[in-house]
Amino acid sequence: MNKKDNSFPYSWIVICLLFVAACNDTKRPPQKDIAVSPEQLNEKAVDNIKTLLEYAKKNNGDIGDSLVLFNDTLVRYSYEKNYYAVFWSYKEQWKPYGDSLFQFLENARLFGLFPEDYHYAELSAIRKRFEIDSLGQNDRRDAALWSRADLLLTDAFIRVMKDVKLGRLAKDSITMRTDSVLSNDLCPRQLNIVKQSGSILRAIEPLEPRHKGYQLLKAGLKKFLDSADYRQLTIVPLPSKDSMAIYKKALQTRLYEGGFLSQDSIAADSVTIAAAVKNFQKKEHITVDGKAGAGTIRLLNLSDREKFIRIAITMDRYKMLPDTMPTRYVWVNLPSYYMRLVDADSIKMISKIICGKPLTRTPVLTSAIYNMVTYPQWTMPESIIVKEVLPGVKKDTAYFRKKGYSLIDATGNEVDPQTVDWKKYRKGIPYKVVQGSGDDNALGVLKFNFSNKYAVYLHDTNQRYLFGQTTRSLSHGCVRVQEWQKLAYAILHYDDTDSLKISVKEDSLNSWLSQKVKRTLPIRNKLPVYIRYFTCEGKDNGIVFYDDMYGEDKLLREKYFANK
Image (cartoon, rainbow, N blue to C red):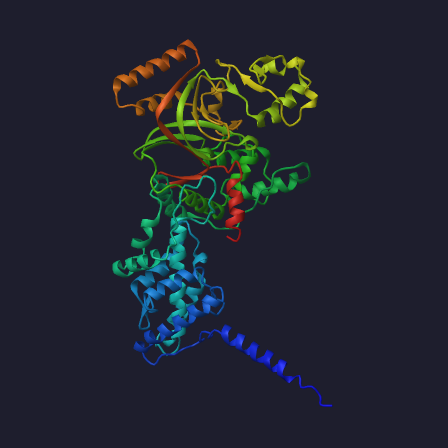
C-alpha cells in the first residue's frame, strides 16, 4: 500500500505565509545614502522622503533610528502637496527659515512650549553632525539624514501649530472652541506662508489667542525666563507632630535658598524665621503674618520650574476661549480674588471678590446675567444642607433661630424645626431652607442671576469686612462682589441707549434698596459672565502668581506635564 503524500498542504501553507509576508513587507529606509554632489542630494532626498513616509505609514510614525513622527498623516499630506521635495534645506545647507524654525524650537518657552516636545534633541544632534562635517565629505552629503531632519522639522512645525492654537489640555465642559487647527489644508498653507515670507512667526503668531490677558501674560514671559532660576529647590512638607524637625529644617533651607535668610548651617530662632516668612509673604502679595501655613508653603514650593509649568497651563486655558470675546463681559478669575468688567478690551471696573472654600469651591462656568434682585431671599443648595445644616441642627435644636433660617415644606408653608425628627435624615431633607431678605441675609441686598446648574450667582454680602482679607476663598460657592453697586449701575447703563430710561431704572433700583423691598429688575441685553481659574496673570511687563487653592493646576500638571 502506497504511503499517503502529505507534502502538498504544508507547501501550500509555506507559500501563503511567504505571500502574506511579501504583502506586508515595507522597504526599510536606508541608514545612509551618500550623494556625489549637492545637486544629487536634493534628488535623492525625494526618494528617501517617499520611503520614509511609506515606512512611517505602516509603522505608527516610526522613521527609523528611534525617530517617531507625531502626525505622520499630516506630514505625509504636506509632502504629497510638495512633490516629496525637502522643505527646510537646499544643497547641503539649511534654508534661512529652516534655521529660523530650529531657533524657534530652541526658544519655544517664549510661547509657553517645551523644546523637548518638538524633536529638539534629535534635531540638535543632526545639526551637530552637519557642523562637524564642514567639508561635506560625509554627513553633509547624506540624503537619508537630511530627509529625516526635514521630516522632523515639518512634524515639529505641525505640532507647534496645534499647541499654539488649541493647547495641550483636553476639551472640557467650558471649552468654547469648536474648530480644529489640524485640517489637511492648513499645514501646506502655513508652510507656504513660511516659504513666501521667510518667517516662521508670520505663520505661527496669527494662531495665538487674541485675548488681551494672553498677550499680557506672554509679554511678561520673556522677563520671567530671563531671570528664572531652574535649581532644584527644597520642598517644604506640611508640618505634623511626627515631622516638626524635618519641617523646620526644610523651611529654613528653602528660605535661605530664596535669599530670605542669610545662612542655613545654624538653626535659626523662631523670630528670625518669622521675619523671613514675612518678607517672602510680602514678595508674593499674600497675608503677611509670619506664619508658614498651607498657602504660604504651597507658594514656597512653587519653584521657577513649577511657575513656568503654571504659565504653560494658563496660556493653554486662554486657548479654550473663543477666538473673539463679546464686546462686554464680566471676567471673574477665582485665584486672583478679583472681578473685572470689560468693555471693548478696556477694563471699566475692578472689584474684589470672595469665592468658594476648597470644600465648597466656586465652579468655572460661562453664562450671562439676565436680572438683578434687590433684598433677595437665599434658598440653600442641597449640598450645604447636607454638609452644614443637618450636622448643625442635630447638635443644637436652636440652630435655625440663631442662623435666621426658615424651614419650608413642599406646599410653601413654614415648618417649626423643633417638630422635625432630624435623626432620620442623613443625605437630604424634604424641605427647603430659606434665609429671609434683609441686612443679615448672606446674599446682602442685591443678587445678580445667571443661568447655571450649580445654583451660584454674584451677590452682595452681609460680611463685607471679609474683603479686607488677602485670602478670600471663604464662601459656600457663590461669588461675593465688593463693588456690587458699581456693577449694577454699569449693567443698567449698558442695557439701554436711552439716557431717560437708564435714569428711570437707576431711580427704581435706588428706591427699592432704600425701601428694603424685594424686586426683580430684568436685563434686556444679557451681560456675559466668565468664571475662570487662572493661577497667573501678566501685569506691568511681569507675571503675578496666585495660590492654586483648589489644586486644579496640580492635577493638570500631573496629567499633562508629569515628565517636565
